[in-house]
Image (tube, helix red, strand yellow):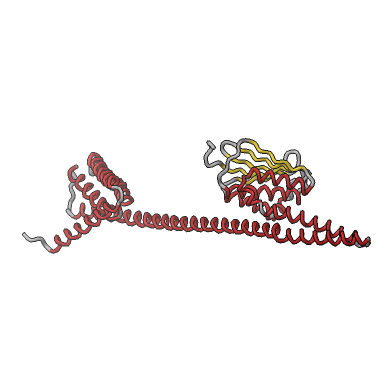
Length: 370
């Protein structure tokens, strides 16, 4: 007997749902996970159906079938959830019939099954909607996180580029001061010395003024050399951070007439010239702050080479830390902290126990065995 149009429509609908369910299942990436979820869902339906059968048709367990429906919907999509809903309704009705349930009209179990199926489908729709919104939110969060990560990386790259440009400009200015202005002042001082000798030979009183000019020029030459050397410290680090820090201590002692000592503890090893340059600049800025703001009477530059980290500490015996408000406005402190952050270090500034200030930068070693 040929199938009726209603039967053909029902069969076509079932075929379409089955194909959609299979597509949801196959879209799950892990085949083992697909099979495991399908097995768990069907097992839940069977177990609840057996319990429903043992409990008898007088006790309804329709609400417990929501568990496999939710599991199937969450794992494999709304189509599989709807298929699980249909299987749950059929299992429940068959279990009640086998358990001895008899109804006054065939429409009663049909109505009962439709109510249960409608409830399950509402669960499927609500859960799938919430699950879809959650996945969309997670995707947006992932995209936003990726965008923020890229933005932070770009910002760090730009900051690094700006610091590198700043170092190149400082080196350029230092070389110009040393090679151009220094030579010019030296030539001027030599001309003033010649003039002073001529005035002295003539026995004129203006020779004293000439010698004063020569002395001022020589003082200017010395200051220019110190300034140029400070700006060219980035090039000294090629010979090693230890050499540069020792030179910084020596120059500070000679120029400012205070006690500035460099102390090395442990065996120094640092291949990263970029990190060495930033450590050197941190030490230089800390020394300058101790001189300008702390009015330090002595300064200790201490480089500790520990198995797990390098620790650079600049300790002074001066006025101590300024007030928090004034400290927050200090550009030098922000620059030192930023340099430490760029090289992955930890920056700390605190008051010394015996007075003065301690500036510390701790840099983790990439290989503690070094």
